[in-house]
Every structure is written in structure tokens, then in C-alpha cells.
Image (cartoon, rainbow, N blue to C red):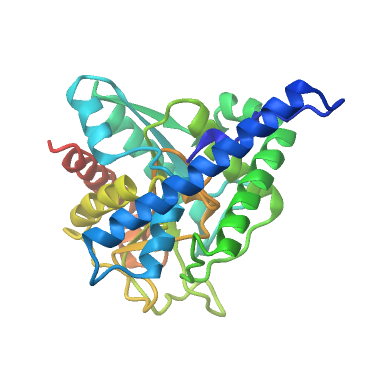
Length: 331
């Protein structure tokens, strides 16, 4: 995720043309020549290695990867775990009291996600190998995050604008490709910027893994009746993003555990593990450094989330999520 274009990047000074200006210009020109030359050599090497299967699409993907250098890797996370460094996991219960998400028979998604988030955090807190950081509890956002939201309004707008510009330039040049995925509901600007702020906070505070908790829904005339689809889905960052590989590996392990009690979503555009380029929570515009997953644990109207079974169901889902994390770390 690439702090090169982060909110605190320095700006070039302007002034009288001088020898310093000339020297800087020559350095930039030399750097440009080196980059172009390096790209040409790298492309030639790749072409020589796989002359039959190599295509211009492969060239574009390779060049794009030079800009979106991996911000984290599965092996690096596993090595840190094996060497005893406590793994920092940011747990984000989806929605809040102002934007509560979906609803069924009076049950709001925001209440369901926070209950599951607290359960997952409790399991991780009991394990000295993990450091859970819960963004929101039943009483609201943690003070640390409320303060961060309040103090970084201007910074997050700069951060997002710069990331969008880089993405737009890469797409325009053909170095990256626009991927069409599942169509998601749009969110108000305040909600969007809050999600980007969480990405910023995760980048700045050495977070290793981000888990967003959600429950799915299917549009229908009345929320008192069940919808058409069932099952879980885990969204992961688009394969071109810097945190894509470890995110996918983590999602695969969690999905394997969730499949013990549920099935992948029956929605034709969803399924088991689904890459996505647009979800802010996963690092839209390459804004998230840590591995990140967004788990839709099921459709809110499914019978296991009814009041009589809810507590047992949520604890099972928390336990399976924790087990998926252990699987990821080869425990």
C-alpha cells in the first residue's frame, strides 16, 4: 500500500531557477531514464523466459506490480508469528448507530456485527500471540478512534485524492486494469471517509490484519420476510493491490472453517472468496497496507440468526474465525 503517495508526503518547493534547480532536474531526468531502461530490461527478460505464453497483458500486469509493490506478505506475517511478535489485528464491526446497515424483524446489522466483533476480540485477547484492536463496542467507537476521526479530516481527503490520482494515471496508461465485480450499495461521504480513516490508522499503527464484519441482505419489499439467497462470502482486495496475496490466503483459511457450519453464498455474483476492487474497507485505490478481509457471515434473515439461536451461532462463527487465523499461521 505504498506510503509514497500518503497524506504526509512532502511537496516540491518552487523558487528562482538556480544551479540547485538544474541539479535536481538532471537527477529527475536521470532517474526517469533509469526507470525506463530498467522496465525495458525487465520486460525483455520476462519475454525471454516465457516466449510462447507471454503477452502484452502480462507486460501491463508486471509493470503495474512495480508501482503497487507488496506491502505485506504471507511469509512475513508467518515469520513474525513464529518469532513471537504479537500479531496486531484490527477488528471492525460493520456500520454503527448512525448508519446501521441492513435489518430484519427489528434486528439491525450494526448490533449483530458488534456482538460478533466483541466475541472474536475476546478469543484473541486470551491468546498471547495476538493483539486485537476493536474499533467499536456496544457503547460506541473506542475513544482512540473518535479522536483520530476528529483530527484527520483534512489529512484523509488529501490521502484519498492522491491515491485516486495514482490509480487514475495507472488505469489511463494501461498499467492497471479496471475490474468489474459485485455491485455494492453506495455510502454517504461521511461513512466513506471514516472507512478511509480506518485504513490510514491501520497503515500508521503497524496493524498486521484487518477484519471487517458484516451480514448480507437481499432487497425485498418487507424486512419481516426472508430473502432469496443464503450463505457466507469473504471479500478480498483486487489481485493488483499491494495487500492482495496474504489477504486471499487468510480468507481461504477462514472460509474453509466457516464451511463447517454453512455454505458459500448462493448469490450468482458471490460465492466463497471474492476479489473486489471497489470496497473501501479492503483498500480501494490501494489505500490499505495490512492484509484485509471483509466477511459477510451470512444473510441476516437466515434462521440461525433468530433470537433463540443467535448467541450460539455468533460464538460458533467467532470460534471458526479464530481457528481460520490459526490455520493461516500454520497452527
